[in-house]
Image (cartoon, rainbow, N blue to C red; front, top):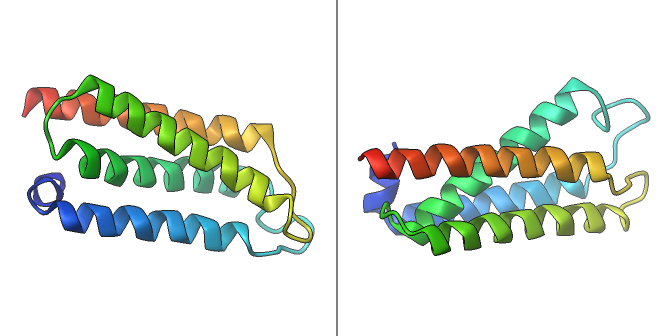
Length: 123
């Protein structure tokens, strides 16, 4: 699938925009106390959502070619989006910003960036 996205950059860009939109939409939702705002499901969501966002973003930016400055720029953009997502939640009733979520997002971003960087070096 990665090869298909690298060869069809427009598809990777669309998936990046869809991922960012879904993150924004889910951040706009309110949850009853104890439903979805904490616990293992929230950790899995944050890690996975930002992993996919980062993968699609890096494919969009690098087009499958190793380029360290572009990868670093992609990491920074994804982390900024994660921070802005938490700030956005300050304005959603029943939601709050969390440093823990930013850390989980960033871990997913960094791990995915390392994995994708290794992938494009070896292919």
